[in-house]
Length: 141
Image (cartoon, rainbow, N blue to C red):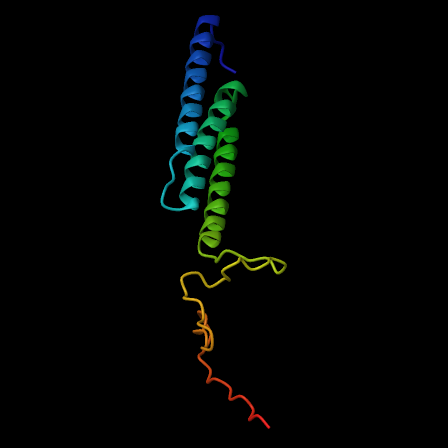
């Protein structure tokens, strides 16, 4: 570890503290903004958190003053985490919202936006169902 005077260490720690406080304020501000999709919200939050974690690891854990191989290992871990989270978010962003099997249907049914069936008539087919001919009632005896 390189030798620093107390005044230099104090300046560095004060700058890191200011950066961490600014990033925390940015995190709070970003939480109130709704981006185009939940995946983008997650990516923004993780990017800010990664910057804060990097500052802590570099300066408070003294990774900046160690051998370069330690920094390479740290950055490789961050890069792999970014790749894995990115692929996970791509997968999750394109899935339909699952509906639990024990969920009771809402009062209007699951077909939102479809007009309710009229008495004596047939209901229009739900999305994804093929229209089937109406069954004939058996003749009365």
